[in-house]
Length: 292
Image (cartoon, rainbow, N blue to C red; front, side, top):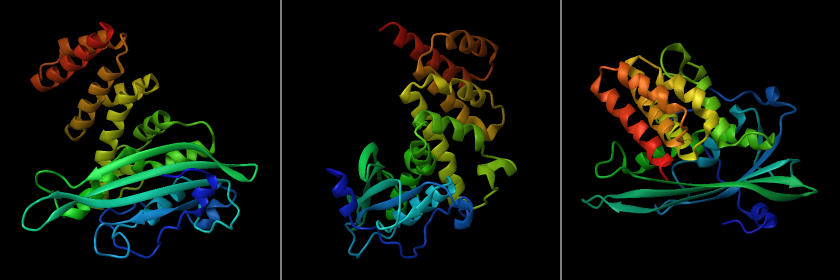
């Protein structure tokens, strides 16, 4: 945990050696000359693993750097270079569950701390701790890379570039960032993530990150997201079913009484029993919150 600004800058720079990642970036980041004039973010922190290796196989620093640059920020690992913002990553891999046959999973804790440079010293303005672990009871793939993919699917990690960009501009919070991402980056067809990437790992991470962003908007009870959630709830194509159901559940979690009539109308017109159940649960959740 970072105690103060000086401590933040004393943290070791993360290793930036080349590694092979299981989830590819959605298109190359902008060339540095295209980022001239953009805010400069100092990326610092520490990374540790329980594995018998000098550093974690997954290179969080390179991944986050790519995300920040894609969001239009310049990134440096050199604290002597002029910068206006600091993003500190504390990335820790610990021994996870025992899966039998001498195999253990991995638990990941990733803490982001964002600092603004004010009168020559950093001031902490935002932080977020993300936890991830190997899938249980049966890993989908590798005991290690399952944990990494689950990290990638957390919306606060997947959209960290957009989140930090909003913080540098002093205007966007998580609710605004997730809502905009859901509107601008639809999956399916040539519009997928704006670039038509066909990397399977990335597509899966993108789809799950979107679902988790929808759920987070419900947890945040962010009413600004309602127009976007209603748009997602209106999707009829089969490959949008999960997003549709998640959007309806989020609408229920937000608990806006004005949503009840709209949900009720959809319920009465719907013949699909599965969707009727989702609508029924959303309405029940709003009524439950109103009764408190």
